Image (cartoon, rainbow, N blue to C red; front, side, top):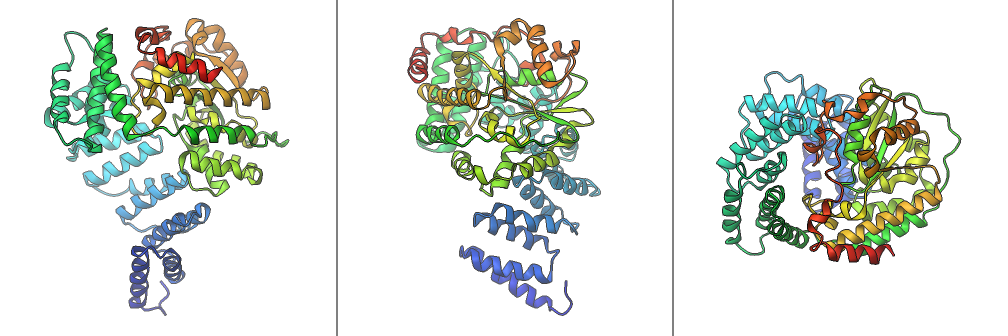
Length: 532
């Protein structure tokens, strides 16, 4: 702090800044916060507040600078450091966030709540083993809230400790019978059996939830979770007529909570197709580990391909990371806002510095390779990013997982993604969403021939060795026998299919939709209409 400025003056400015913030006077708040930082450049609270103000004013790049400036001299203040990490992650500054987390890890005798906060942040950066170790310590230190135990169970599941996750989830449901998150994850952990399932308990809670206030979104969401758990159990038991009714009730509730915006989805696909496609500049190959992008529809087999490739000695998996999406928005200086944000990015595509985009992405992700030559970025939604990836990272392979439309759509319908995938809760909506994806894929192949390698899910599971040879050759990798044994891959996997992909390659998921052929006839008809 500048000694010529009395502390009382700084406090007065802080009060002014908070008054302006509460009154939504963002320009005045920005001026007050900038004045504070001019004389107290290491005031982390003011730096975070200024970043928030700039973000709210639509200035994504500018909102990053106060946070990076603050990192030059960090205080020993755990709550402020946690907030700083959250803000850095939101702006794609993962390397900086991890540096702050490393500092937090030095705290002596951290309380349970600080360990939980660190675990959640390491979870957010995709560091599953570190997050699990922190939650081990948090539980030992007394962490015992429902959300904390749910997070712990998820980390156990993703790490392959299915039995441990089951114990935690069963304890949750014995203490909080209407804990829908626990009921849903528990049903997904393993195949339900006639002699070992929770159908009576699930139905009891649904009856109790049905008696609660109609129209309450929180109650509706929890009820949908229990309906999903009933569906999963009945589906496993082969009671398909009853199972479909439970799935329909679940999806009806979720569709009401998350209506699908077909108009915006079509507009985004139109914009991506109409976007000028510029081929990559002649740039030398980047140094360091190479990303391999796996894209496609959700539930198309992307996780299986990820597990197969990451069992190669030269490859590791970074999991489902959104780093490219974050860096694209940062370079375009557009606030992330799902489809509407990406529409703005497309509108600015001709002005994007693609070298900067590629460099930022690599700087924030290459640490994930963990000493390997390649790392997998497996985010299905990056199918929308193909033109941007090809321009920014022309040497990075892009693998597109292709599964039959009916199997793909049915698998999405029965996935229960929460509040993040509105298309997946209605037969016509999922057909429309699939049709937009198919339109975009056709465009990428036409506009950027050779940029994407299609990988057939059916071929991968029916003839894995031959299919894999083509995939490995495309990536510049030698064939390794270990790739054909993904069940031996001990790395964590943080996706809804984390339990299933620890099995050997199998064909059981082919034509799964036919168990519900009659109920899915409207889906088949909608797909035929949209894809014609």
